[in-house]
Amino acid sequence: DTGVSQDPRHKITKRGQNVTFRCDPISEHNRLYWYRQTLGQGPEFLTYFQNEAQLEKSRLLSDRFSAERPKGSFSTLEIQRTEQGDSAMYLCASSLARGQGYYEQYFGPGTRLTVT
Amino acid sequence: ELKVEQNPLFLSMQEGKNYTIYCNYSTTSDRLYWYRQDPGKSLESLFVLLSNGAVKQEGRLMASLDTKARLSTLHITAAVHDLSATYFCAVVAYQLIWGAGTKLIIKP
Image (cartoon, rainbow over all chains, first blue to last red; front, side, top):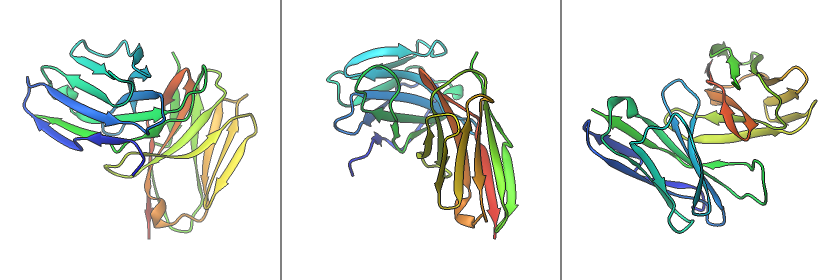
């Protein structure tokens, strides 16, 4: 499968624990995005990378959230001290950007987080 | 603040009927996407609309864009059960800005 992959697909954790998700983009794609989606809503942008550089981070994103893409390939999203309000589907997407502007994003299957 | 509004948010219809989902947005944009999402699944790109008057069709789905009215429509012709899903529109404004989605249930 050469699409975007995410791991794990499901995560149940207790409030206060830290969790880390992984995203492997389409291999030649240089941009990688993280979104959060709650039930009945569209995806909410969290952050994106171009290669290894984190170029934008949502102002709505708590300091408990951090993302990395150390070698410009896979990315990790960590949530520290999870809260019940963090329960959501976390989606990763990638795109191949050939310049400035927007390029079509391809989405992974998502990681569903449940905080109890 | 850029807003993308879809309506209806929920639609239940019988097979064989026609219906239209509307997507209004509040600022200029040169690109609009329609996505499909099945329950518990990720997002599948259906259409990208790039210019005023653009119309794209795939099977029983047809999408159009009126940039002057800041309106896109997704028309379903002779609906079948397999089209049951949630449909999102998303507008490009540096990043993708999403509507809340229209949950479509098509009853046999």
